[in-house]
Image 1 (tube, rainbow, N blue to C red):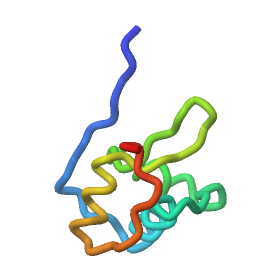
Image 2: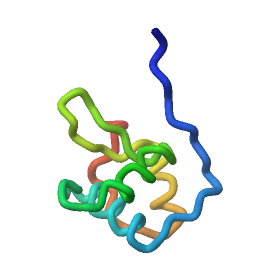
Image 3: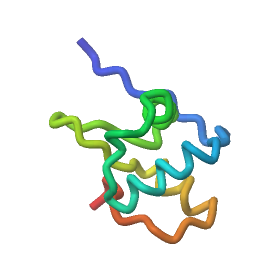
Length: 80
């Protein structure tokens, strides 16, 4: 059974709430109390990934999005 990867859509524009959550995750802050709809939107866009333990990390696509938005905090990227 093949693992389904999220559809990457670099043209997606995030809401303020989604962008704030992505920035918090990049800074290493848990998104445990964020609405599931926000987290799922970021996962589906390919900006976050959930590892085996359920921990969310920012993907390279998420880092690129934050960079394009001028965010200065990108500490939790999965490319390390």
